[in-house]
Image (tube, rainbow, N blue to C red; front, side, top):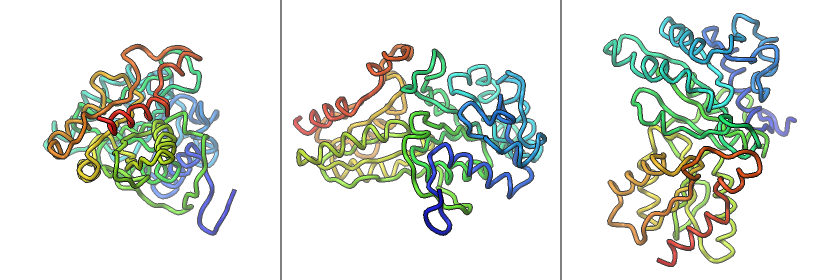
Length: 331
């Protein structure tokens, strides 16, 4: 639905499709690869219509082999192509993990800068959509630990298109995480033309002096609801959407927590060894003496993501976030 000249009102998944279409039109080197991305348009229809427009040589249905088509894409990227690989769900990435971490992330260093791997690995992730086992994992920390690959996680349609285009144009591999819960949960005006959102830069969604709340991906709407409810109690939060998980926007984090002195981090992933811990390290390194209360984390639990209705007990909720905000305020 077109609202004004030059923009469309899109969902997040439509913005992802628009970003791929924009770059497929601009650069013949751009390819899309993955299971069911062609005729079926992807399990979430993120690639719907792309094969019909650009042909089977550029939107390629692959065998059911994450290691195989990811490895093939690495070779193609080294040789001048710009492949976009779709992993149907982030939890299916494990067979391809060796290819990504042993080869994609290391080739620039291995060749002393003579070669790079300009590829994007798109992966829907997260719980809350009643998917079966393995489909709902949120394992971004497996990738933020390895230098050589960037990790991007938009929460809104505008950011999704701009960050995806920036990722396609990046000279190094990018894991592009797409929160399934956000795919069709909201709409936003998105420019029709090409634009980019800078990788490595977070975004302030709300301005406040009392508490810094940091979230990303599917947890951003959860944090937004909590922050909005706290305004009714006279507590005003600085809400930060990280957008990029590696590299982190350390300047924005430090600026916010030095202003508020209190921090709550909202993370869907398991508590142990998560990105929230890296954010805490940034705060300790840059802003420890500004803290007025211990940092609070609201996370998933150290269990496999449970089935169906039990997801509601696993996932962070606005109520859990509010409880942590109140805890740091009253410390």
